[in-house]
Image (cartoon, rainbow, N blue to C red; front, side, top):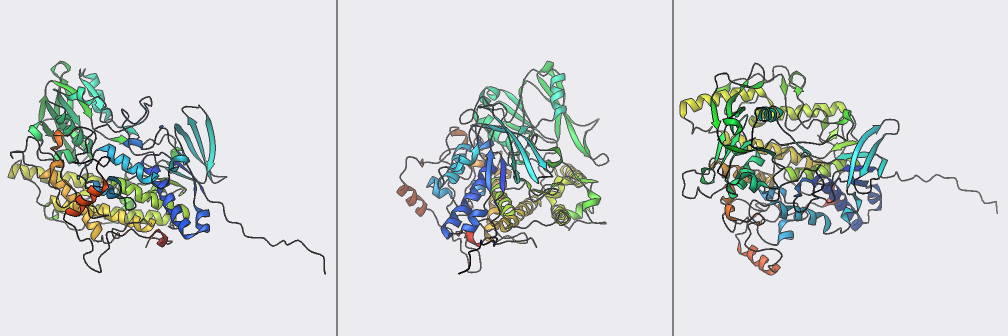
Length: 635
């Protein structure tokens, strides 16, 4: 026999899985970790060792001591000593239907075991989200470093890695580590946003009342009870806080807004007529020896493409004002990210000539006969497209991703984008070249510009043209005039947001199907319809009805609202919303005290909904098999 020789044949090595740093353990961070866990469990069931070996190794950093992000109330389940975090107030309720944020892998029936109202308070939904991610994985949060602040994220070009610096609040330990990928999931509500011109006006004018942001409402009863209060801003936080103020005994709430397009302005009646919307008016002077405010009419100036105060414009004096609440939103905290990698979250405009074809015209809509062809503004502030991003990835460096939502369906959209980011990392979804990313972004901008509401939001000149038309109709028809096409515009705009989300569901292998970007399926259309009904609940409130002293949009008829996952219909609140305790979710029975058999009986007694209309239609009760995830490239 010959002498044995050493076998030098090289066995191909399996590439090491990518390492990922996730900043934040609010909904975005939790949902990304959960997407990985769902894939892991499916691969383990199938014995897919190669797939398991390719899953990313994730380290999540959270500056708070607990998960949940902004959904935590600092007064009860947050850390009161952490003053640098933004949290919801204890009594917050959702403004949109809960059906928007029900997940296909863990339904409301799974968690609550009973039908629920259309709108829900903060705490039960936070519990639902936390239970969703931990029920099959008790050690889910082992990958999270709590009390750890990310102080710096830089890209090392030579090593092709991110250099992440962190600091632990408790141990004071500071570390610097490297990662292949980085996902910012710190939330768009990172820090309160104030209109500094109004803030300076109140200070210099000697306003003697209290000024707070909508995120600072831990002692809201003291701030509003028996008082006359001014809200700056007319969006969802203004709407919810106005209702909370009424519940807490406010004397009067005045809601001031620049454009008058917010949901609070759209509301047609408020309990006991305690809320007055001051549309297109903002404070311009402190009066009454520091106890009052003078509002002045604001108009959109097409020449300057800015909002201006008319020299001879209408004014309104608000006297005996004790509290001003800034319901002016938030800014994302991007301070830890290297400046060149920070997106604007759609707060930096596109140059119109760079994104719209020459001689572009809008697809005709019902307002075209009144407005004609409106030349676009020189700059466009789009809703769905950021100049630096393509589908949540940084165009200049796709290893950097941002988990956030800009759709009508925020929490569901974040969950969907978590799956899409994971698919980018694993290679199941292919990213195009930078040039192709820019081209596809321009196509999405064209979609926005063909949608009436989206264009009015991003094109100043178009909004100004419609605003001028609207004012003329008010003069001709009276203050009660409403655009007969308004409901259609809202429905089309909601459908556009759902179409964007449907596309991401398909590309990310999300375990739910609502159609595609071209056409929503039955499930997707029903989701849009429920959001549309939610809007109608506000616009159809009658200020002269017998129940106007107590009725809110949350007391609206629940017909038409039901789970898209199970078909379980929503139920009315057990009492008037104004009469509910702040910790009461409005359900007659409590999931902790009523046996499951009773829940089952209640559900079975409710009218069933046939979610399988025909053989060609989608099976709305089916959760897609995760094993069907295939590598996709956008068409």
